[in-house]
Amino acid sequence: MKLFYDDEFDAIASAIGASGKPFKEVANFMFPDMKTESAYARLKDCCNPTGTQRLSFGQVIRLMVYCEAYDPLLHACDETLHARPDRKAPEDEAVKLVEVINGATYTLERAIKALDHIKARGGIRAVA
Image (tube, rainbow, N blue to C red; front, side, top):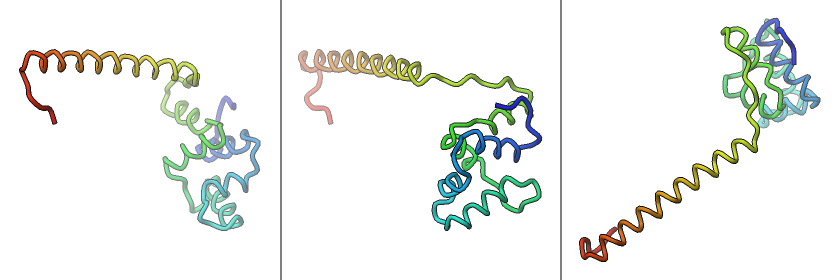
């Protein structure tokens, strides 16, 4: 991870370089509908400040996820005077999701009991 990036193009190229994946492999992933050489040329052009091609915001995100390198995000934080974020641990996210699921399950169980109680008292005949 670099402390400073010259521009967004440097950040994108740094992410690709930091991934350890061959540039052509990344190009094939980014542009699967193109031939390898065409995809390679297009991605090279996207990394060139004087090039004519640009990656969309969604493509930059896709590139970061595939490369597992977040230099463009860090550059965006630097440029907008935001603190660079810490990466979330997948285990922490899993714990949060389990808590949400458990809470939803508890709520559903209580609602079913309440509905059964109403049915038992003859309050409703059928529920669609």
